[in-house]
Amino acid sequence: MTIAPVLKRGQPRARKENHTYMSTSPEAVSQDSIRLQGAVERVRAELSKVIIGQDQVVNEVMIAILTRSHALLVGVPGLAKTLLISSLADVLDLSFKRIQFTPDLMPSDITGTEVIYSDPATNEREFKFLQGPIFANIILADEINRTPPKTQASMLESMQERKVTIGGDDHPLPEPFFVLATQNPIEQEGTYPLPEAQLDRFMFMIRVDYPDEEEEFKILKAYTGDHGERPEPVLGAEEILEMQRAVRNMPVADHILRYAEKLVRVTRPDSEEALEFCSKWLTWGAGPRAGLNLVLAAKAHALLNGQHHVSCEDVATVAPPIFRHRIIPNFSAQSEGLTADDITLKILESVPQDRKLD
Image (cartoon, rainbow, N blue to C red; front, top):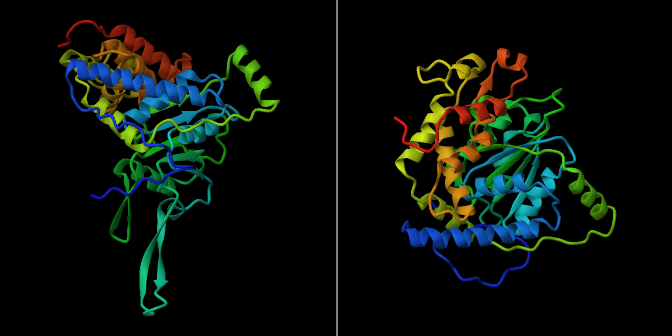
């Protein structure tokens, strides 16, 4: 398959030294970790010009990008979700499209459509494909739960297959390609909640919380005056693709894989391996994709923190945003005021880390 060329934003940047992240030797992993840390720190420094606080959100979004995954950001209006994503596109020097999801949005409004084109020279007619906004590196799917299921499905199919099929022809999406979607957890009237099977396409459900007191003071001070700083691009498409390869190539010990597997399997309420409280409080547990995401996200987390190997602690750290939309609390849990995060923390306390699991 031929990958569509990556669209450029803004002025062309000077050519940087091209690093290759490929080897899995300890020395190479150490070098990859240093390069990744440096690159992500540059991204954070540029984002801090316009985004105050939200360090955890930025970290989780970067993990999703480094693992070639998608993320769903959930938070009330006014918490800079849209500003964060558009600024991230500037910093990464990638093409960016915002799709505002509304009840009347059609699948072709996202993917594109075929039109009849008449050649003025020969007067011959043929179908010509006009690309939709999905053909960009970073897609902001704003308020994705406000559009009907048919349109949601077309978007999520593109996320999974990384291509658009129109009239029997495949049109590959540019690489790298990320969908960062947003949802408002307050207003539910007139919305179409994403089914669990479609939510599973997102690696993370990222909770965007209110800023703390000091952060809110800085926001008031910065954005009621002359706040003219704009982030500068510090990474390009090729560098991001290399970083993704580095994450994929990081070795993982078997007992780490067993730990991730155990975390997933104990959530399934009808299985023999289920923890007692999971059988009591969950309607549905996590599927195999949760285990894949646990391992990939743990790899990225380890590299970003300068580690030469993945630990069980890395897996445990990334578990909450991965399980948040994959384990479904039942009425019994809700009546006790328990959320998916509460149950995830109890699972992490119940499954031992530092030994091989049978």
